[in-house]
Image (cartoon, rainbow, N blue to C red; front, top):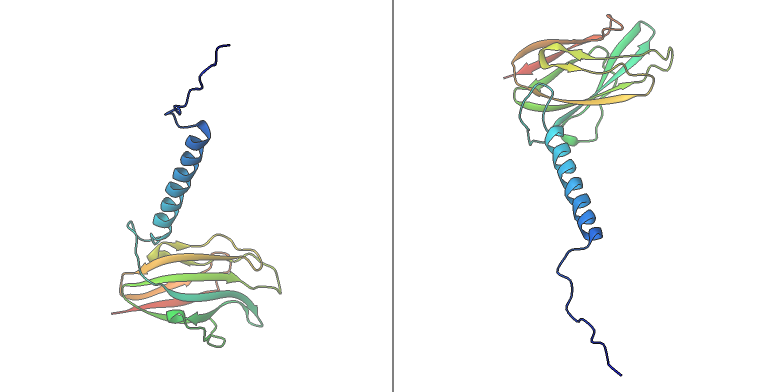
Length: 163
């Protein structure tokens, strides 16, 4: 009787499952890196800004006088929120990265809302009731700039960029 010898040498090739697993990990890492890089570019910039943004919350509301913007700010990440400030004037230091959070809280009419700041290329989509959108922009120009709604022209306010 002749005994067959087993081949004890292992294959040097990588299995198909390992290649697919590595490809998935690489694709996820590239997609994550792309997302991180693009999310750090403000709407009025062309390169990433790695800074802690100043959070500004603006609510679109309906009051007895009609439609209006109401500002509530948590500057520097603090959780203290100011009271009602209709059609507010917001002061920001030049060079500040701003994270503008726009929320439609118009429950009375359920109307679409939007917010625009042309000087900083900030334009939200039309927000339905209780929809929100966050836009990052760099306050890189001194002066007073209007923000407004194209849907409701009476909704307005001012952003003042201080030196």
